[in-house]
Length: 71
View 1 (cartoon, helix red, strand yellow):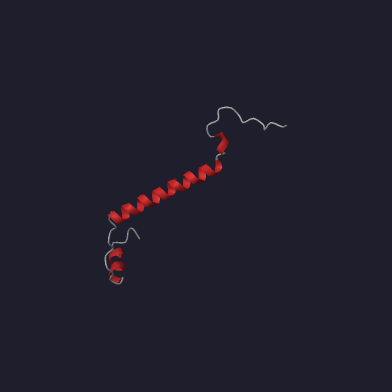
View 2 (cartoon, one colour):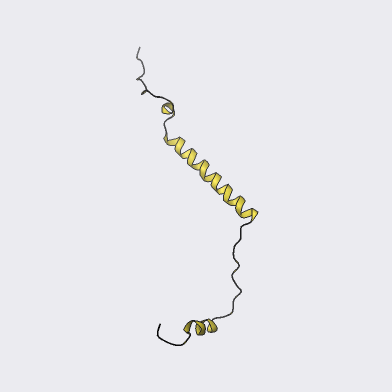
């Protein structure tokens, strides 16, 4: 096909139906706000997920927790 001297791509494009051109997406206030909101939701979800996994008693402790005293 590469050696064929005809313009096959041009011929196929001529056979295709006409369509409106594709509009490029541009940055807008709405798009930036949506991206910022998605970033904030992701950060909050990650924070909550990490807090659910880390034990509360070991956050600032430098020594291991002692066993409860018995009476």
